[in-house]
Image 1 (cartoon, helix red, strand yellow):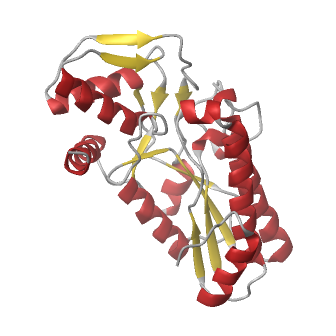
Image 2 (tube, rainbow, N blue to C red):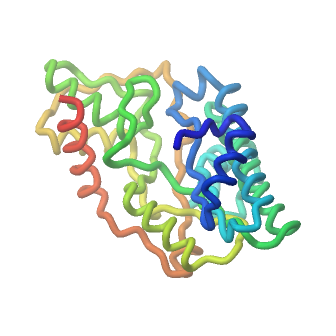
Image 3 (spheres, one colour):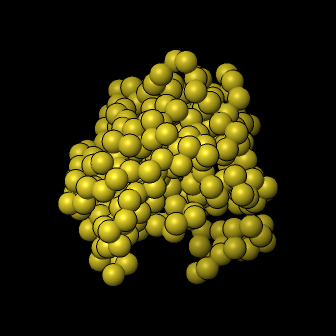
Length: 273
């Protein structure tokens, strides 16, 4: 059943018809730096509308036993001096301007869940994952995130025997979580977690954009010249999550990065022949 989550009536009708006991709220308007810069209003408005409708419907339906809200690591302050980023760093400083609209929406969502737990009883759990990747990702040249964009860029460059353009300096470091690990964490959370403010989800390890590009080049056996477009913004220089809390509670990521990257490259080659 297709549901327009921007429309409250459709969300409420769906909840009435399906009567779910457990709700995984993953829907969002997402994109990389370029998409966020070009559409800040849409990223704020649409995400607020979507999560407001879903969270409110879960609050007002007694048959919903537990609901999970999926946020993002972009909620944290820009270039915060203390790394890795711990949950208590939220709202300690301004977020990265290039994705401010999306970040504000996700902060509002996790706070709504927190307040709903206080006012209506503990029903919500919130997870803040780092950058996701894997089969099924969006490889669109303007809308994709850094890893999927890099995979497409390198494979296309090899096909055309051209240099590889790198957005910005290549120095920013990012943490990546394989999609199957996130799914595993979400199911584990429903089974094992009670209401909490929110928890980071990641691997606790990061890699620079330049290192990522070189790794993809090695895996596809292509070693071109790199061209840095320094007119483009880097975004946050470091964004690595402290995952000590969720690890202590019993969950850890399992997929080695090299294996997940190989699977992602293979998926792109098979899907975009």
